[in-house]
Image 1 (tube, chains in turn blue, purple):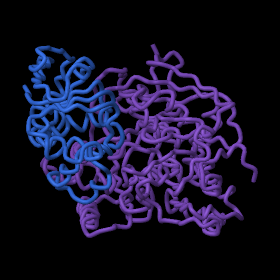
Image 2 (cartoon, rainbow over the protein chains, first blue to last red):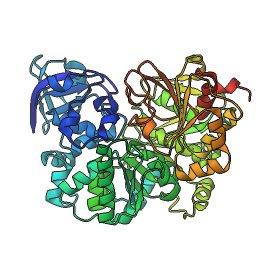
Image 3 (cartoon, chains in turn red, brown):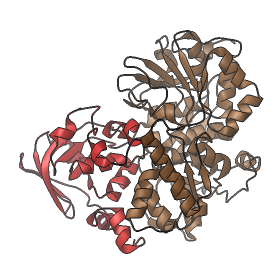
Image 4 (cartoon, chains in turn cyan, orange):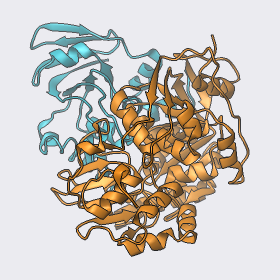
Length: 167
Length: 418
C-alpha cells in the first residue's frame, strides 16, 4: 500500500477532544456531518482546506484521551491517507487500524517534514519519501497481522469476510 | 523468569504461558459500551455481518453520557441501544439514572482475573480489582460482540511503588495526579501500569479505583493492583465471589519501576490544558473559580461524597460559585441520602444531578462560559472537554474542590480548619 499527499503539521499530545469534540459524537452517526468539526479547536477551517490523500504529521502521543473511534473515522472521512507521528496513544492506534486508516510511527519524519511538503509513504516497505525536501525516512513496518486488517479497509470488512480472527 | 501480574492474568485466561510482546487472541469475560460508543458499535456489528451476539450474558450496556437525553437525536441513539439489547437478549442493560458505566461494572460485574474491555478509555479502572481491563473503540466492541474475542499484544509493565502515609486532606486523587505529573501523558503508552506499595495496600478499594481510573492519562493499557483482603471484602459485601485473585511473581521483569514517597505530598492540581500539567495546589492558590464539579468515574464514590460533605456541612458555598454534585451510581446516591450527605450538599447551595457523565464530557450539562474557570474532580482538562473551548479546567481532589467552593478560589485544603 502506498499513500501520497500533502503534509499538515500538528504538535504533541493532540487529544481526541481536539480531533473531534465529545459534544458532537452523541448527536449523530453521520461521519460526513461530524467531519466538518474535525480539528476545529486548532483550525476551524481545517475540514474545508484538507484534500483527499493528504497526510497528517504530528508529534508524540497523537490521539491521546478518549476511546472515541469517531476520531480516526472523521479523519478518514476527510480523506486523510496516513497519519505519521512520533508516537500514538494506543487506543487511537488500534482504532485507526480498525477503521482502515494507516498509522506510522517515525520520530525522524515527524521532526523533518514541514507543513505543505509532498510526502509518499510505502507501508509494506516502511519507507517515507519527502518529495519536497528530497529526503527518505524509514520506519518499522506495521505488523503483518494488522496490515491484513488495513488491506481489507478495516476490521468490519476483515471480519465480514473472515468471520473470525485469523491471527 | 517470573511473570508480571498482567502476564499472569493473560496466561491464566489463555491456559498457557505468555509474555510481554506476544500477540494473542483471548476470550473476553465482560464487554461494556455506553451511549457514546454503543450506537457506533451496533452499526459496525451489523456491517460486519453480525446477526446474533456471541455471549449476550457477557455484555453490559449503559446509558450514562447524555442521561437523560437532551434532544431527539440523542433519544434515537438511546432507542437504538434499547432495541438492540432487547433483540439480542442483553439483560445487563442500565438505563438513564443507574450510574456511570465504570462504577456499575465495579459494583456489580468485575471480578479478579477477568478480561474486561469497554468502549471507553477509563475501562482501565477495573485493574484496581485485579482484572485485565482496557478501553477500546466501537468497532472493536462490535468485533467482541460478534466473536467473543479480542487480540492483544501482551504489554510490558510499568511498576509504580507508592510508600508513606498520606498527610491529612491528601487523597488518592492527589497521589495519582502527582504520579501523572512525573510520568507524563505518554510515559506508560502500550504498557500495563501496576500500582503497589504500602500506601496502595492501606488505601480503600474506592481510592484504588481512583488510581487505576487515571492510568490511561499516562497512556497505560490498564491500571492493575494486586487483589488482597480488601478487594475480596469489597466484592463479598456486594454479593460477589473472589474470581481468580492473581499475584505477579517476585522475580517478574518490569519495563521500569518508579518509586514515590507521598508522606509529605501536598494536595495537587492539574492545570489546563493537559492532565500531566500538575502542580502543588499552593502554586495556583487564589485563582478565582466559577464552577466546581464533584463527580465523574474518578471521584463520585461514597468516600468522595463523605469527604466533601464533611467540609461543606453547615456552610454555604461562595455566592459566585456553582457547585454540581453528581453521584457515581444509584447505589451511591441512595447511601449518600441515608447518611444525610444529600441534605448537606443542598443546604450548602450545591446542585444535585442524577448519576451520569454529562458534566465531565460537556455533552448537555454544566457547560461553562468562555473565560470561566472550572475546578473539577474528573480526569480530563483538555481544551473543550466540558463543552467550551475557551473555559479553563483545573483537576483536583474532592477535598480541594469542596474547600475551594466555599472560598470561591482555588484553596489548599491542607491548611483549612473545619
